[in-house]
Length: 126
Image: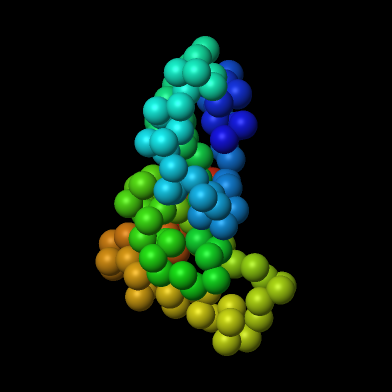
C-alpha cells in the first residue's frame, strides 16, 4: 500500500513491478483502500484500486485456488504471472504450483498466466 499511495507508480510509469504471493492481502482490500484515502492520503494521485492495476502479481499461494481466483477477479488475469517458491519447492510440490493454475483458471486465463503475460511484460516474441 505504501508503494501504491506514494505516487511512485505515476512518477515512474515505465517501471514494472511484480508483487509476490498474489499481492498478499491486496486483492481483498482495494475498495476499502479507496474509501480510506480521503483522510489517510488525501493527495494521492490515483485511487489504490486503479494503481493496483499497474502492478503484476505472481501466482505463489501454495496452490490456494480461491486466492488465485480472487486475484484474477480483482486485478484481471492479464496482471498475473506464473510464480513458484523454487528452490524451496521442488518435485511434486513444484509441479503442483503450476498445475493448480490450470485447475483454477479457465483455459484462456491459464494460458495468459502461464505464458503470454510474462512474454508481453518482458517483450519476448514467440
